[in-house]
Image 1 (spheres, one colour):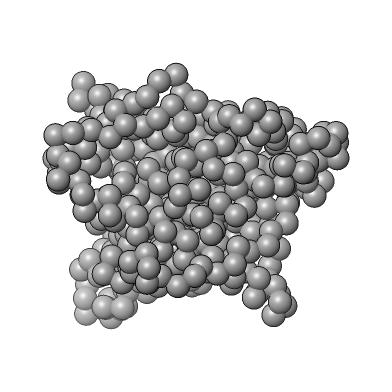
Image 2 (cartoon, rainbow, N blue to C red):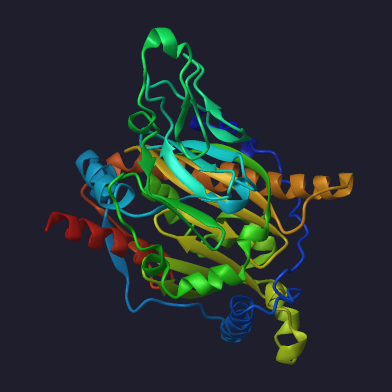
Length: 422
């Protein structure tokens, strides 16, 4: 993974180059012919969702919450509250930290850091996923640098102790002089891990016992029907981003499309027009795509939902999957680092591998477009939000009725903090 952005490199509005042209996309949901129950249910739900979005287009409306929501600015500033959020949220819930296709077969891994915890996710020779602390049990050296890769064994660069992909200690260099080492007591420290619907969830608490099926609830069959596990990992980039809540606020509404994304997102999406659904802490924003203007009058059987709806599935606390009904998908994982900084992994998935030069060029253009829009428009703006927080201390933000995603996100955080304080 390559870190490619920092606030210092961001430019003023009048200095930014014109964004690349919006990538062409093709719908996948309308072409899917899978007969499994999850796929059939997902296509049916997609058709119903398209009808809801068409209704919003016809009436020039959007999904609305019952009332506005106010959030104290101090909740973004308070370093003690940030620590409590990390304990109540990121150290307590199963975190979506990888897509299954980032570990496409036996002997693959993904390494990353979450709140100072070095994590190594692996797929062993039997295809089973494991998660463990990315630190040698000899002297604590980092075993694998952040990123994705392939390995038969994990060997420590410091003293060459080696582990298999399940984390079991297999080799101790010069054990004759070092002294015998009990393998079962020096294997890598395991973290709870589970794989559902093409997404890998990890807990930072080694003693946690999460029920992933209950955590995902009724959303799980819809995700399974989207067949993310069958996708191909094309590329990953990292961007620095501000406070995790400041960052994620920008992912959870379509109200800003016309003003912030005038020459990018707004060219393909209507602004302030969406359907909204929640499943426990998770949610989906279904934005209205421009072709709805031409397709609204057609009979339902002649419409492809993927040409009408831009569906963004959002898993708490920080995974956004955009382009879920298309052949090219952009995944964003927002991971807190400090009270004022987070990092965003931007992962590009393809329904079919990019084999030809033309296919690779199209995939590159797609990834570049998302990267530049997020860096130069979304994050340039949210860094500005963060710079103004101290001056606004003691006041509050207001989330409109047309921003139900923001309300649901913050309401969930408040609930988890309340539960943790009992």
